[in-house]
Image 1 (tube, each protein chain N blue to C red):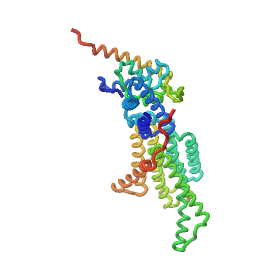
Image 2: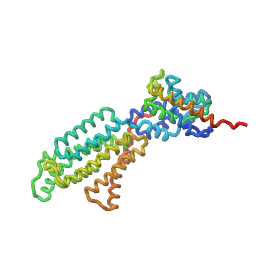
Image 3: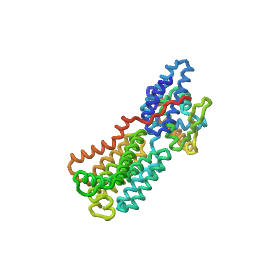
Image 4: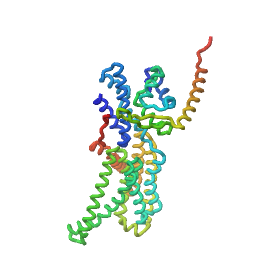
Length: 117
Length: 325
């Protein structure tokens, strides 16, 4: 899913895509696929780049698991767009994932701190 | 932009293998994304052609996107899996308890299967329905197979001049039944294949073994005669084998609904259909050699994969990929 030429293992991002999507949907209230991809790119300073088409299957899986809820909305130009919003179950899981991520990141930083002296 | 995007989305749609309504929704979502991306790139100074090519390149390969999308959509719930395995379990129970010999019970079971299949087809043809559809055509196969006796009697009378020919009205009725049965099986298979050949294979899964069981029973005693005479020891062994086989098909249909990957779905039905079918048919015919079993397995494989060939001939459900806004 991620571009491995950008200096990280693509599996690392693939394993955290769900958390990124859940976090952004929660923060934005309602979001659609393209907006989410742009937001990830902007917030990561262009570091994270998805193969964009892979975001939609990921969103569908979140929807299947009851973590987000999709809704079609008609735009002024007549086109339809699917917006995603959080469910209570999604919010609960996001809190758990955030807590886990913070503990994990702190522990990693403690172990992998530069050698002193 | 339209032509390149439409070609790309057509390729995605070709490999999606979902129901037409879901496919349209998926394609709409992807189209809306690509349109916005192209507009964004054009605003940043790219030409329409450059913008389109960059948008498609950053989107990912059409086949890979279709495969991921299929996997995201193709997994049914446990409830759907449970409903999907019910016809197999009903048939397994009919054999395990020898109730198939009681015409009223047999009729009631198949009436329930037919009714469920009819209701399911009116509710958007969900994936679980294909297990039911396979058994729904079976009562017509039973009736058609019973029609051979008057036909044979009449042919014998015409050729050899012995015996009594069947009345014309009876032959006409049986002819109409046979034509209807062939039409029913063929049209259901074609319709299922147009949606997804693997669903047609799921539908056809129980038919070869059931058809051969029916022919074997009919040749031995006659289906109706045997039912009226009641239990016979010779058929007891076949009942057990058929019960186990049907229950195994039930497990395969649960796997089919629950796994995401297409190759695993195909593996679950082909594995059980071929290995289980060959084992049961070996019991019917007493085939013992490795070569015979191999040929039997190949014949079953050819039958179960026939929808794949059919799909190449008839194509798929055609719908416009890009709906202009």
